[in-house]
Length: 260
Image (tube, rainbow, N blue to C red; front, top):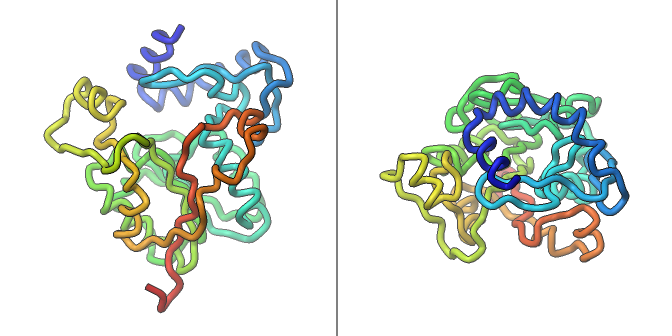
């Protein structure tokens, strides 16, 4: 089964995976009925979540109903408990929109919600995160998860995200991390899918981020405003929501005017 999962994720285009997922969800959510794990995104309960992974197939990862992964469930409770995302009128840009979020964010009346991506069928704007077609200081929130590892110039992408954010706005910017690596590893000469998978853990990644990831964002101009949110959660909640053992879940903000 693990080999089948890896083969499908690594060989079927993302656009087709998204389209096929609507049928998949109809049948998969009935396979693991129970009450051992809970998805805070869709409020569903299961005996366990489904397996998922491009490189290492993780057990208890994918929600059968909304397709949330560990990071999505963490982001959801972060937004719920640490921000006014669900109550305040906000203009939101969601880059590479995830299905589990996109379906729910569009229905939220307090959000002016816009999506963008190069190829996703869920995107309102077809564009590159390295060259966003939006004005400066336009958005209160930017959500951009597991995107920066795919772009040629992540500093340019970070700068573009910061440019379109209003002063004081915050961003959710998770990336896959190697917690054993101090410095991010990138090598533009590595171009073949096979070699990228070997060095960056996925065929379409262009770097492997290390523990210096927050510092890279700081160099672009972002502020880190909080401690790692995952550290605030107890073991029982982590197990209940099947969260990652390690994740850098910070609130990245654009400085207010006049603050450097």
